Length: 232
Image (tube, rainbow, N blue to C red; front, side, top):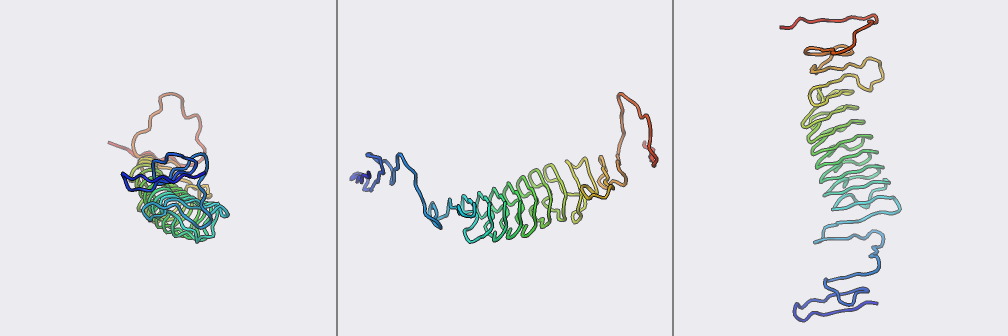
């Protein structure tokens, strides 16, 4: 049953659904509120929540759109994933996250403007404000506020605040907290280089600074070259 109640003191019409004493413009008790297809829940004329259950797309906070044909997308935050057309399995959380993506798939962006310039590439992960914000590549991972916000290329990994890949236009690089670096990472060439405090490693392990062993010993060395550079 529904009860209509007019409050003469406030000059308001208060409607209750299964609520005999409504206290708001609309009070619903003991049931659901159902919006039919292609309709929205709005606040101050802004689309707050809408979905396509056919495509399994769900959007909150003026995010996404209902013209896309891509499936299994989720977006939360103003304009997040709002340009998407055929991209699938994407998640954008934060204002402007994945805002320009159209056909990229399986991307995760969490943070304001994370992956905001990506359009067509796949399999990126950006966690943090402005993470991977100008990247248009594939398979990149950036963790931390402003992590790799200036880098492009593919299959790069960065971790830490305002940490960029060592070569801003290269691929297959690693930078952890501007301390541990890598080249040819995940390239599949058996030519991976790791640098400790060396941003451009030239061999499998390139260390700038001292190396200390507290226990154990080097028992054998395979054929190769060991470079020892005298320090002060």
